Amino acid sequence: MIGPAAATSGLAIDVAGVTKRFGAKTVVNAIDLQVRRGEIYGFLGPNGSGKTTFIRMLCGLLTPDAGRGTCLGFDVLTRQADIKRHVGYMTQRFSYYEDLSIRENLDFIARIYDVPARAAAVQRSLDRLGLANRSHQLAGQLSGGWKQRLALAACLIHEPQLLLLDEPTAGVDPKARREFWDEIHRLAAEGLTVLITTHYMDEAERCHRLAYLAYGNLLTRGTVAEVIASAKLTTWTVTGPNLHVIASKLRGRDGVEQVVAFGNTIHVSGRDSRKLETAISEVRDTGHTWTRTNAGLEDVFISLMDAAKDNFS
Image (tube, rainbow, N blue to C red):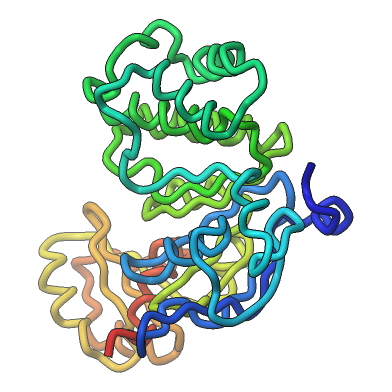
């Protein structure tokens, strides 16, 4: 059974002020986060931003140094063992036994969780993730995409209420990523809550809501539209020849926060639209097409990361 608070509040995760320090360094700084049941919540940020540390506190592997709250209705400070029984955690690195078969790995995980009717549960997991025909193949012989399926099947074997997925699609091909996300949306439609970290903007756009961390601080959160709107970023798209020359002229000008290549275009962005337009007017010519466009999620996240203060020092 899940905790009583989760059943009444409609929130799978409800934490405030969660903080973690390692020595003098604060790696997670007073984060507030609420995730609704049945929601796919994207957790984004550069490497070293504190995403993995935060996830490990949620699933009971680390204890916060400060803050309070619940995960599935269980107190994150005092009910960590209960949380672990109801959460599926998929780590960045494949962590199953490569000299065991797919079926043997799933059976081992089912034993750890003391899953009832274990053989039937393993078979259901094999069937659901399309692993039945490969069930006797050694895990070490699998490609990245099939290892990903095995890891997801292992996370689901004990029927958790919450999935914590830490960059689960890193290193897999686009087809495998799409199939993985189709499965995540099917699980969410059935009521499973998912908190997922990713560096891919197309994946971020498939989440119901997002949060962005940089250097331990929560910088923004909301739907994709809300995150983009809150950045108040003005973006111009430039097309034409010798874009590298235009880019070099724009960088460093007052009002220009970023100049980023996107295929055969460059995006020029800034928060002060008047200063940005003044800077553009100084280098604008008839040989290029300048179009004011809506900022994209990647524009916003690069801007947020550039403005964030490194917590390493």
